[in-house]
Length: 112
Length: 115
Image (spheres, rainbow over the protein chains, first blue to last red):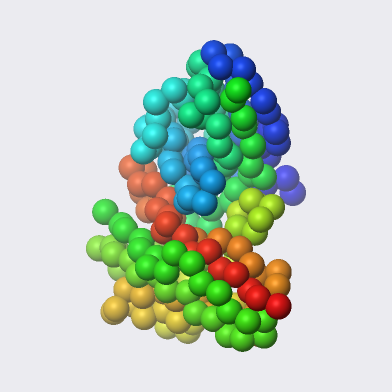
């Protein structure tokens, strides 16, 4: 029972590089989302999706793109990495109206 | 829109003591879930306990229990016989209710269990 699988766990990027954080869930959840968490702070919503083909912006969407071509997958793309994007990123999935949000293990991203 | 407020940014208690973390919320819904998540230093987000609003009985999971006051829109977490491993950030949360909703998290309470 995999739950939410998020990769990679660690990543170092140079300023200007692009990359994709992968997130997959096997629970058939409609809702998926990406958060970033900076030191000593709570979770800030980047983008979210309520189903395949539907995405929307959260609080801090700039510099990030998402797509939801299937129910299972919700990748997060950093278009041109900046040091301000150094953070820990979490993917989460949840049934709408439902019984809990399930999180990936997190990705610690450092942009140098 | 739903809101979640955690008014205690940081707390410290001695090991084996009982501690209560506060959470208040606002919603126009009549039936909903509420959750508490634990985030230890490893950064993993762990679902601690959940409460369904239509259930009058407070949820309990081992040493963790909630005091759910629906009329007051209060959802506090009580940790009994606290242990060093309970040291973590704790977040109160609301799940998405509909297609345009988001998971709503409180800002978190950092809990230190002191030896």
